[in-house]
Length: 339
Image (cartoon, rainbow, N blue to C red; front, side, top):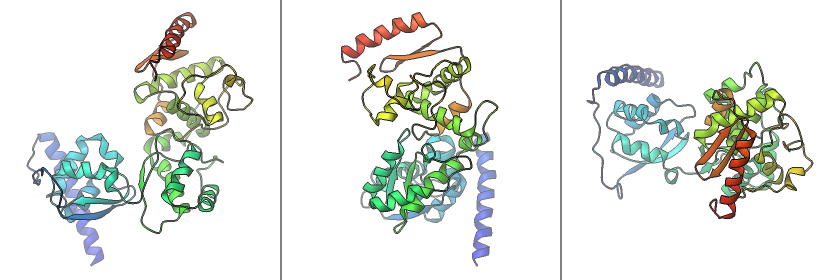
């Protein structure tokens, strides 16, 4: 019976994929879908389990079989059209029954509907992630043991940078060791991380991950590829990186954009003001966008960048222009623009 069920589900997935491609190309919207309900309060709910690595079509079948959505195709169409669907966390999700495909996606993305949740933010330090494990309920002894016994990709000796940012839901009884290893395994499953682990003609996987971590710490998503290019350009000509984020990592300090001259003199291999080249390892745990940017920097000759005001980051290859912008930044900082 189990074999028959597996074959049946496989058949549903294949049929769904074929039908979805036809519908998406033809513009058809005939997939049966429950109507959007104005309120789910008091509605019957079910907890479903999303397997690690499940595709959109597989999730669609799970939702259909649980009577969350009226048809698997309806959810698949919504998931394909919404990039947020890639962030659906594996593990348990509490969902209302007989809701529209759109509402099902929103509930899958709602952290309040994920039991036993650990949320790892992009750019988090390993120390911060360990604190999240403590808040989750693991003991300090369990956390220390879990992070010291991780199985890392070949060529890596530290887990900093390999703890993939995402939302994780773990079943009751999950050990700290299993939970921590899941973060590393999730990194290895990411399509851009897989490319990173192959290295490049210029950099080893460790160096690429270090670049990605600096990109994550230095910019916002829309600036990642340009920050990446600045790093590449500086390394190419032997110019010190002089990235504030590497000093912040040494000091484990967040929230202050101003870096004193004294801070830039701290003696550490991570201090890119005093040391040339890349620091010896990642300075945070980057997300997929930063990893992609490390692999695919934007074209440009920029050597300098500075955020003169929130939302206004400028790039140049001219040192005099950079200094003019730096004066604007200083005025804005003293005026409280960054507060």
